[in-house]
Image (cartoon, rainbow, N blue to C red; front, top):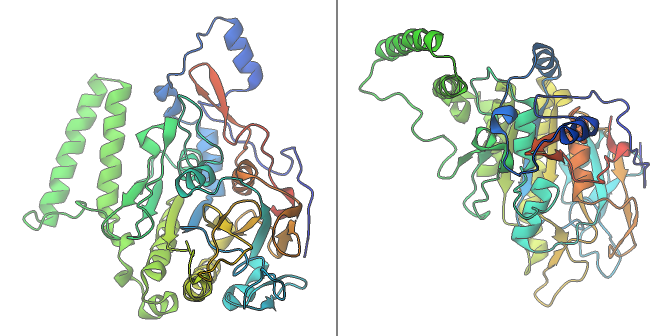
Length: 443
């Protein structure tokens, strides 16, 4: 189905509401205020990290939603990807090609994704206004700018908090490194270190998780069994949140050691590795699939460097070829394994590129009319939402901001974007105040 624009509903109909120990309604907040709750901004982390109810845990397990964010670091051009303008003075040299969805055309640099458009919703009408790398990246990752005294969690931390399982032995949030994207680590903000990403800064394998060669596997298991027996005895005598947290942390580290093979593509059959290709981006996309298949809620894979102030067309010819090949392989792999219906794949950067082409045949930073894509879980595939004018200078229909996109991602995952955390006595909704999901792209 093709949509040049779409209705953005305000309500939550069709999505399951998710409550948690840290979320309270506005009515509950007002009641607490009336009872004399002090208005300080110190987060109650014991509440934030509190146990979910059994019913809540059961519902999360049933949904089993996951996210893979393909971060196009530096800002990919919408003209050379999702919103081509051939034949105009801003369009550049590349054609727009038909996709397998009638009425939707994308850049000829993405032929593989054109054949898989049934899985994808394009949003062509982002207006996020900020065109500075650092500030814009933080805005797109968190869906809003930090307030004085408050550091908001990014989308990975929110997904980890909402969809992570307390008993999970794998990480809730993994950010795979790239040597050229500025080493953005992500942030868990006021949610605390429990939901911070495992950021792989040197290689695709976490450091210090392999058993020392000097310790045999039998000794390793025996030591773990002894420690567990002693810990259970101690816990029985000393009930406290600190002890429980320490036990949980140890179990997760132990589980990570047992899951080290997830980060090694050599454990995949040769034909699967060949489909993704030998590039760093391809191997990281394959690792991302392995991680979500094992239960990791959020994985970020960055592909840099799209900041094409010079030689934009040559740059995008190379980078789009890598994106097209690897994302096509990822979508196919997820679909064949029955994972795509529960895995949301996002392409996003900090902004787009200017309609004007500079003297170096490049495009500069541009945040007033640009594009991203959502594929898989919770998304209505075969949709192109929003519209820019003939030369891509401005949004003419369906304008959306960073908060709207953040809310849309949460809604696709079945998470109530209006659900609130309490930061001291202050209610903080998951998406920015006034944000609305783009209903036209939701399944």
